[in-house]
Image (cartoon, rainbow, N blue to C red; front, side, top):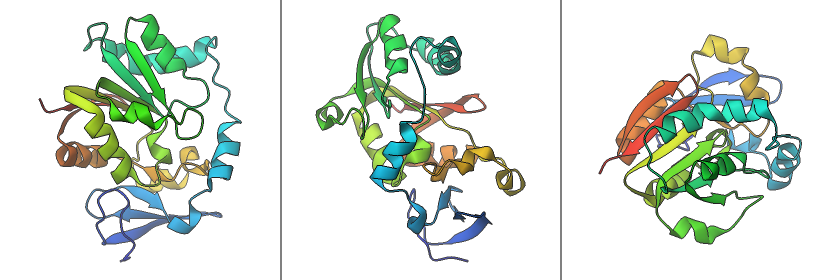
Length: 214
C-alpha cells in the first residue's frame, strides 16, 4: 500500500499498479485512477516538444472521421447556436472548426497553444475535451474548472482511451506516450460523475458524455 495521494480524489490509499522501463504507475483504491509517480511528470518544455510532433490537419479526412465519434453524439443533444468550448484543443483546433461548421458558437483553450485564461471566465452549454484529460497533471483542479464553466444541464464530452485491466495495461501502447500521465476506467468516470454532479453516458469505447445536473 502506498501513501501517494491520488491526483483526482486526494485519497491517500493507493497501490503500485505497474512498472515499465521508464515509469512507475499507481492506482487509487477509491476512484481507480491510474497515474504516474509525480517524479515522472513531464516538464512544459517536454510536453510542448511532444505535442509538436502530432499532425492533426483540418483537411485530413481520417482525423475528421475520428473526431466525428465526438461530434455525432454531441450534436444529437444540441441546438444551434449553442455555445461551446474546446478545452485542450492543441495547435490546430479542428474539432472547434467542425462544430462551428455545424452552427455552434465556439471558443478554444489550450494551456500551451491557445493560452487565453479569459475564456475560462465564461459559461458554456457544452465543453469538449478530446485526447486531453490523460495529460492532466492535476485532474481534480482541471475538472473543477470545466464543471464551473458549464451551464446547468451543460455537457462535458471526453475522449480518452479507458483502462480495462492491469494485464492489458502492461501491453497498452497508450501509456507509452510520455505526456500521458493519468488513465481513467469506466469506474473512474462514474466516480467523477458522482463527485462533480454529472450523469454519465458511455457512447463509445473511448467517449463519455457527462451531463451536468440542472
